Structure formats: C-alpha cells, structure tokens
Length: 59
Image 1 (cartoon, one colour):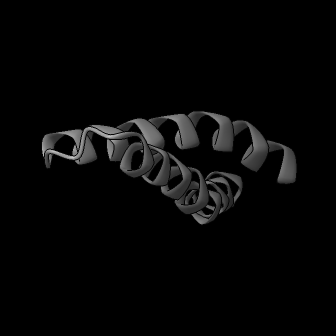
Image 2 (cartoon, one colour; image 1 turned 180 degrees about the vertical axis):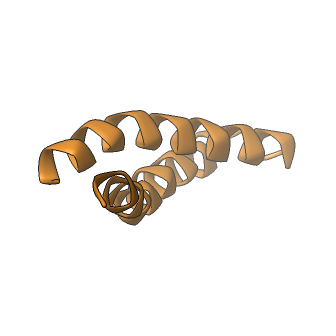
C-alpha cells in the first residue's frame, strides 16, 4: 500500500499545490512568499490525502 500511496502522492500533491497557488493568486496575493507558502501547504496536505485514497483503493 505504501507504493500505491507514493504514486498517488505524486499526482495529488501536484494537483493540490496548483489549486492552492491558483486560490492565492485569485485572492490577489501575487508576490513570491504567498505562492511558495501555498505550494508548500499543498504538498503537506496531500500526504494524508494520498494515504486515505490509497487505503480506500487497497481495501
């Protein structure tokens, strides 16, 4: 299941980071630091999301 979670993490993390970056840009924060924080938050949030999705697929 760890291998499946790793594969899903690569897809989910890029999607969530991109979504968070777009949300930050829509809110009007166009400088570097808010964009980097949004990307980092997307990568961090996607860890448990990938684990839950992998667990649901594996079960």
